[in-house]
Structure formats: structure tokens, C-alpha cells
Length: 153
Image (cartoon, rainbow, N blue to C red; front, side, top):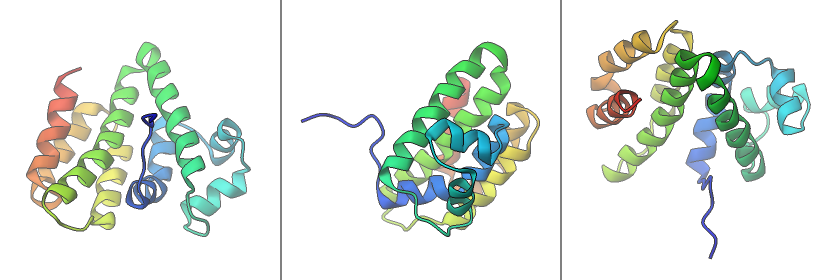
């Protein structure tokens, strides 16, 4: 059996969909830019961001592929932006793991608020400060996992 590079659940896809705009902001992409990268229209990206369409597994895989590719490219030219984008993806992953381990449902609104804060910070250091101050809200284990992933760089 093949192992998927980007396994996803409905929650995983919903987290990415709810935070697509924040990712685009960090990567300095317009809706058109992102649409062109994954082979859809600007309107499709807009519909995904406004929840007028559901993010399919195929969209999820395409998005993760181009996002991960851009993060790797940014490591050579803009390490800070690359780190903030990775921090954002780690926030999504760690929030889902934490909710599963604690047998809790995901708080999509809290994840989106944290995501927006990371996207609007100017440096990864500021993003880490913001995330650290959110420990009580998003969960100390999530923050600890994010900080350790940031420190490994």
C-alpha cells in the first residue's frame, strides 16, 4: 500500500481552506497567482476562501504541493517568510494532533485567529512571540511543538 505524501481528513482540508488567505498573504500570492499555480481560476480560489466551495482532496494535494515548493524556494531568498509559512502549516498540523490526543474537537475559529496573527507579523521572531502568548488559548502542547519546530531551524 502506498503512503500518501499529504494525507488529509475532512478537518485537515477545512483547516487549510479556512486559512488559505493567511497562507497567500505570507507567500505574497494573489488569488490569481495561486489559481495559476494549481490550475484553477481566481474565482475558484475566491470561492474556496469564502467557503462557497468545499476544498476537495485534489485541491488540498495541489495546494500543499505548491505551498511546500514555495517554502523550499523561499529558504534561499527569504528565510524569514519561509519560516513563518512553515510555522503556519505546523500550527494546522499540531492543532489537529492535539485535538485528537485530547479527544477534543478542533476550534477552527481559534486556529484561524492564530493563523491571521502569524500572517500579519513581520518576522518569525514576532510570530513566535504571538504564538507563545496564545498558549492558554490554542493549547500549551501545540505551542511547545511549534516552538520546537522553529528552534530546529
